[in-house]
Amino acid sequence: MSARPLPWVLAATAAETSSDERAAFAERAAGAAGGVLLGTCHRVELYGTGAVPELGAPILLVGEYAVRRLFRVAAGLESAVVGEDEILHQVREGLAAARVMGQVDPTLARLFERAIGTGRRARAGRRAPKTGLAERAVAWLATQVPIEGAEVLVAGTGVMGRALSRAAISAGATVLTASRDRARADLDLEEAALRAPSVSAVAVALSGPWHALEGVSGPLPPIVDLSSPPSVPASQRLSLGDRWRDIDELFEQSPVEADWLANAERLVAEGVAEFSDWLGGHEGTELIRALRDRSEDRRRSRVDRLLRRLPDLPDEQRQAVEQLSRQLVKDLLHEPLVVLRADADGSGGAAARRLFGL
Image 1 (spheres, rainbow, N blue to C red):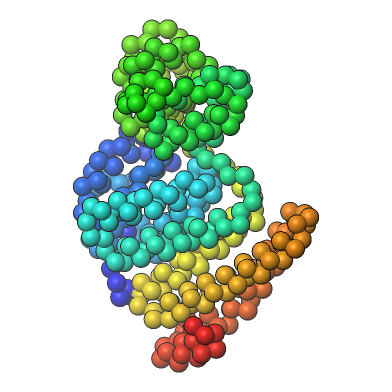
Image 2 (cartoon, rainbow, N blue to C red; image 1 turned 120 degrees about the vertical axis):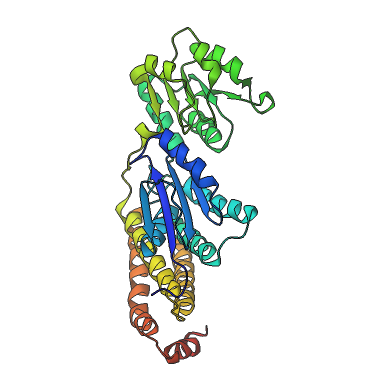
């Protein structure tokens, strides 16, 4: 039996629901008091504690299942592009917004803080190129038209709109931006709708319908729409056919390097175990976390120092050093952590504090 209120999550993702269904669920979830709402292009998730509201979500997870869900989301293991960075920022924003709106349950706040910390550690030292949904969207446009040297119209200047602009520029395109607020972009949405037939491709990330596009009579170029629900009018989507993609059609898991994935899964499992211990009232959890954090800090410091002295070491050997150091620390901590987890009277914790200076 938990000594604290159990966390839960109500979720709707692109894997189970359409963008319209997710938007409807987001409206219902926005009115739930005391929860933390996480809304992205392809997921809407409401986290809370205690009684679960009836909001008609396709997914309900409670207790350790909800804890594991948030840790995996923060680490990027549930993203369309596995390991992408934007989701961690969105998790932080979700907690910050909930705190502004009112009091957040301490258990829920702690869950988000621990998940964010695990998400940061999962990305630390990652050397592989990092891609996100914007890069995936531009890559799809590149299958439709030559992007390098092309003029791409990006409708939207929010977080995703800016990401689309950066991705298009990185691919060699010239970007023309559009926004509802003319002061923030090259064109307003009415001007952009008139300009759309003359550009090579269009990328959209708006918070509402792009009504002006409905009146465009000429043929449109390929359009990728990352709005949720889609901003491109249904009539234009039908006329575009295979030359239109939305967030749901871009949703698929991407291959990632096996070493990074294994390390991220390990960090998530450790984080979930620690939080679950704390949730159940285990008093040694803070000490376990402190011991792990100190060990990881020292391991990271020693490895960084070694690699700076060996700048020409091949990537494969650098990864071998990382793996060996992580496994060595894990092996050395195994017995102390077993004792601390079974420490019923606190004597093991007192000994650990003396031995490790915690």
